[in-house]
Amino acid sequence: MTYSRILGTGSYLPELLMTNAMLAERVETSDEWIVSRTGIRARHIAADDQKTSDLAYLASLKAIESAGIEAGELDLIIVATTTPDMVFPSTACILQEKLGVPGIPAFDVQAVCAGFMYALVTANNYIKAGMARKVLVVGAELMSRILDWDDRRTCVLFGDGAGAMVLEVSDEPGLLHAKLAADGRYQGILNTPAQIAGGKIQGMPYLHMDGPAVFKFAVKALSDIAEKTLDEAGVAQADVDWLVPHQANLRIIESTAKHLKLSMDKVIVTLPEQGNTSAASIPLAFDCAVRDGRIQRGQTVLLEGIGGGFAWGAVLLRF
Image (tube, rainbow, N blue to C red):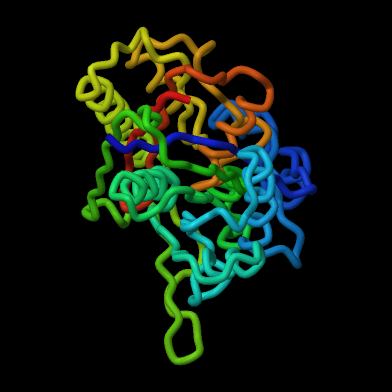
């Protein structure tokens, strides 16, 4: 049997750390209001001249270094992003040029906050099918570019960043099992509906979210898919060493952990200092926990998250 395993990880966060106090200077809010509702205290915001591919590139360099390989050994690049550099070409193609590895396949995946899991599963299937041996998977976002900074319901939630993993072919299972799902009937709850037509932006170009509706759907959907993933893999909840959830809201994270009977001591949480970085949040959190020694080789890790679409999923892996 052919499997895939994670060879290396990397991440990048922009230099500017925007605290809740800084936000309170531009919109009617407060540190107490934001923390009590979300658990977020700060978020990183990209410089005006930074693009999504720039963040992806810096995270990718760290992942490639961590993997102990050269960029030229890659034979596939997948980027999960909601905020591409441009309409086309894909951010993955732009990243490929920056890495100096022309010729190999490169494409984007768009599933918003669930994007990295969709990309990870796609990479896994390429490897299992014998179509790739070393794959760079990146989640990169500039969420600050689609926020209405006068809307305190949304601008306090999101940040910018990128996380990356290098997967390689293996004789032993790394990615153990995964489940993905989507339901377009809920597209109106969380979206950015604008489009370009005739050289102009049509529709609202800012992120829109019905917070209570998202919370209600997310808690049930994440709990259910995480439980089904474990059941189908034949892995007991007690055997999960770490849960790495999408970093959207602390109450959602706590509710999912409680449903899975996991102590918060087993949950990787980067939300307070990073906010919601959409497709970048899971690889950012994973890399953080690898580098500080919490996630170690041989441990069983469950990834799960949900985003606009709705699209959601869970990936169980052995690191």
